Image (tube, rainbow, N blue to C red):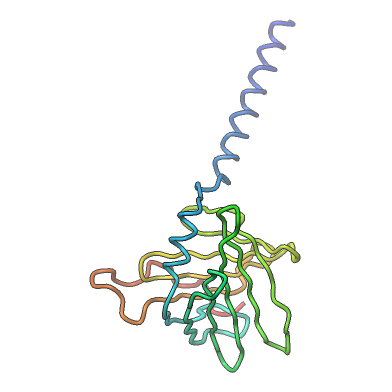
Amino acid sequence: MPARRTVCRAFILSCIGFACGLLAGAVAADPWSAEASATFLAGIGGDWQGRAVRTPAGPFGYDLRFEPDEAQCMAGIAEPGGVHHRWKFCPTADGGIELEFLSDFGGNDRAMFLLLEGVTDGTLVFHSTTLEFLKVLARLEQDCLRLQVLHDERLHVEIHLSRPAPAAGTGACPWPAPVSETL
């Protein structure tokens, strides 16, 4: 009987180890470096046109221009419907990126700060330093940029942007259409 228990215990422990390995692989982030940060920051510079395809208020046009500032950040302002959105991506000392976002909707004048948490399948994942429920995802592919805002891991806002004159042969941006335009 003790040998049988040992075999069962070993089997259970190996199954737990296998499941933990699968779980760790499912959430593992892609490697990231200071060079990747510099490439992302340089890649978002310039003009973008597009739409906020999913918001609490429905879809609307969303044009954005990123320019470098004195702190080596890429700062951009969008003015959808009379509201100002300021996006500011900055390199960090450890080779990552931080995001400062400010929307003056409803008279707000306080920016939110988010740090790069990791990169999954080419999408940068930022988490808020003060609001536990808030994440921002950013994905840059050639002449396409997608920004997503998550509240409690649920999509709150999705923005699809492309260059005004995409490079020849790049085609349409690869983002899927939203399931619903409003929440």
